[in-house]
Length: 216
Image 1: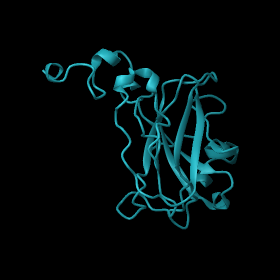
Image 2: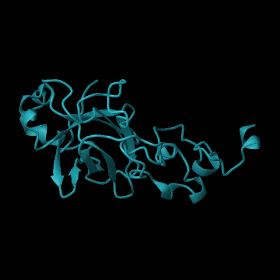
Image 3: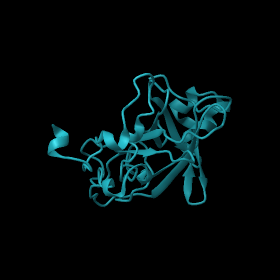
Image 4: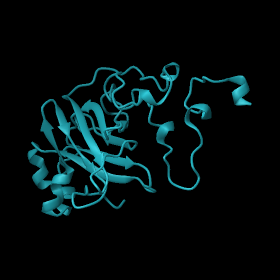
């Protein structure tokens, strides 16, 4: 009935002619419904960073157009990384979600910077790389170091993988109670490093270099 009222190409992301059916035998790959999410990886502007426009026809690249955002205070940053599996191969269709405070350490609860949406989603491309444009977060309290909550969704991952991103130049890392729970030799998997103009944060799903994920 919906197809009769609104035939393809429909201006939404539910057209089965574009994406096909989700396999019932496994967990994905079904993220094509969410990967072409235009504007969702830009937490402070209206760019299409982090989207996958090559996955659908040009006429459909109107999905979830970025909404206008207000003035956002703080230091704009780009976060970039690659998602790798246990064999060191890139994962080309993972979805990364982030949640964070604004530059003053306030979450989106009515008190934060009015132009800041506080969360975003990005997809990995064929090279396994994801990107976000956001603001460097402030401390949410006197104990925790500035950080970003990160979730990973992907093929065969039944439950989202949760971790944190910290900044390598942050002195407060030394006293952060969450980092203190992580064995010293593995803390580096939670630390983003400055690489030119971006903050680099690779995510390894399994293996010797596996990122520390939290049991929540």
